Length: 119
Image (tube, rainbow, N blue to C red; front, top):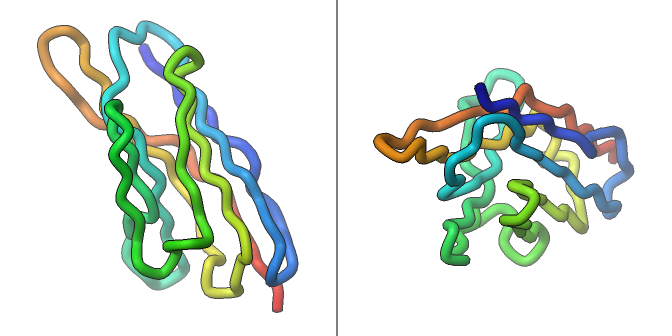
């Protein structure tokens, strides 16, 4: 069993910053890609940022230049530094990791953490 524990969400004023963390624990063989997604009320879940094990990144256009994804492979943890937050960034943020068991890869999701940006 592998668990993902997210932390760092909360309420912040527009222009402020938050840092999300997602730590994987349990019977980990190897974590491949790690990413952050968000879902606002009434909207579909969207990818915010993605980071491969090799270090390649991809960002949604709406967060480029404001958000930074990073990872600590030794701790099996992925971070999302969010700066210059806007009210439209308000959503539940989920981390997703690709776990390779030695024979196959499957995606695992965190429980979600609420980010609320007030204007």
